[in-house]
Image (tube, rainbow, N blue to C red; front, side, top):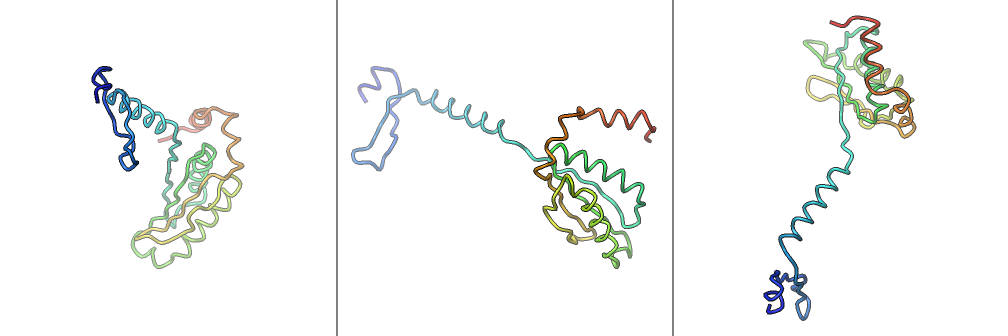
Length: 160
């Protein structure tokens, strides 16, 4: 304690269960600051996986579904997960096989860039599945920049 007072630092007990207890002379405020700084850096380094969603209905046309599937393909190529949800309205829920077939077709069309992480399941008034990027799909985003596809689509056909 005398050494800590002379150095104008803190005496910190490192291991209280040891015999004799182990203590260190250090600036405790600086120690806490450094530890918090390392934790912040570790959080920055973590990759956050974003889950995008496309919503459809059992009566969605093939053409409209293809637009949605192309969006999902772009997201999967940028290493995002995609949840595909088919919402039932009214009595549509009595025919879940239609939605199941749609989900299987979507999974099949995206099988080159994704894997089915969560198979189709009914949740309330909807049926959904989750697609995750496959390991081989990570190479494609390097060629075109992320906004180039959207700008090309906008110039071809005006959106509402």
